[in-house]
Image (cartoon, rainbow, N blue to C red; front, side, top):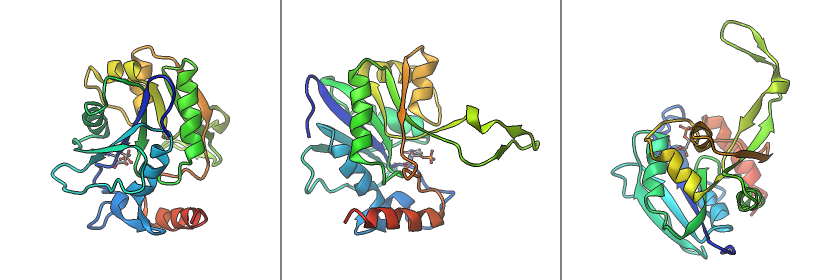
Length: 219
Ligand code: C5P
């Protein structure tokens, strides 16, 4: 569904090798509940976007079917790091885009409602909007010290950005595990929105069983 004033584009990063997951096929291209992991992520992104850039493994001929999606879908090869992959995706986002979301393909259960919340926070003036959830486990560092979990939050994707803030943040070629870290490093205003506990990142093989159950409920 296209948005008002200025377009919204989403970069879905799907160029990781999935080394922690193992197997011949990167986890984001495995099929769950009738669709590949990446396609679930693209579908949710498409619900709030005028266009989606899907960043796929370097040298890969994998394409994402645009069938059934009501927005433009572009595929591009990624880089050696997540940040590099985002930059390759960002290079495909047209200058007319006002809001740019970045979403991990490996989070196929993120809801369309969460995508919309993130877009709205950016349209309300944030440089970056990030979904967060509280940490429920007791946390120890590697030396065995207990870390006060009430001071911690786990950061998810989709993350939303004003296009200018995201482009400025990536201009230096810096690396981080997410994009809000880079926006923060150049002085951007970060707004947090409630994340979704079920919005897990498929990382280990067991995660697929959880995600399959959650996505199966949506069929
Ligand atoms: O490695 P990590 O779990 O942080 O990856 C998060 C997302 O970034 C995944 O969807 C993965 O496919 C993507 N990624 C990428 N290019 C890389 C590394 C990771 O698009 N070089």
